Length: 98
Image 1 (cartoon, one colour):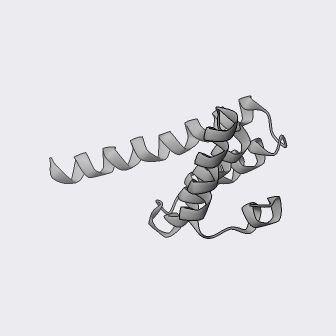
Image 2 (cartoon, rainbow, N blue to C red):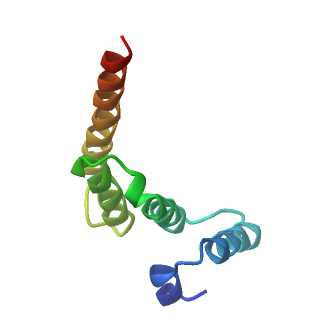
């Protein structure tokens, strides 16, 4: 699989096979490819993510982090913000059921 095929890939099965091939050949899966695979999986459920933009922003930040475009601190802030969305939603659900 070429880098162009990887970056435009929509066939997650082919991407998983590629990653496992790398793992078997080299003994490990490169962090960048694994992170981008995770991001691709996240994009598959994009419509189901909560409407708050912090959820999607975390995925977009993870993609930029994989390419070295943002710092680990920025990635952590985005992840914390996405977790806050989840926590806030849980509170709303709890309030509705009480």
